[in-house]
Length: 145
Image (cartoon, rainbow, N blue to C red):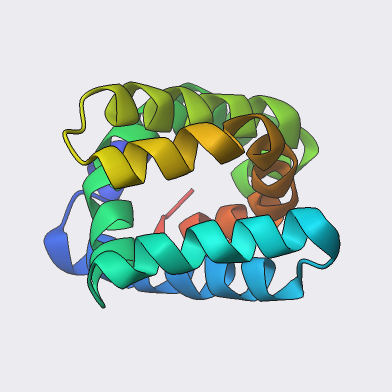
């Protein structure tokens, strides 16, 4: 069964979104320096839209992101461990996720969100790459490889 089929239930995606929100919160709070301040400021703006905006946005992105990750997850199953496969291919995993968020942001009508995303887009890939091991663990926790 494909990853997207296993994780399609609303309760599962809500749990994954909550765990991913905590992962993002930890990553953003660990940032330092000028770029860290910029990221924290942008993240604060996005969180200020509403208290549940981040988990809601993640939950809305999950179906597309998980479908995009299906081929990599399947390759990982063939290799024996999809969590390790995503982690070992964190650059490609990040590009796959960012392709989904890029497409989604192009369709948004919220100028504030779009502007914040576009300002940080080039620098955020490294943060996504760094988050891949945590994301892979979260997906592995909810899937049956």
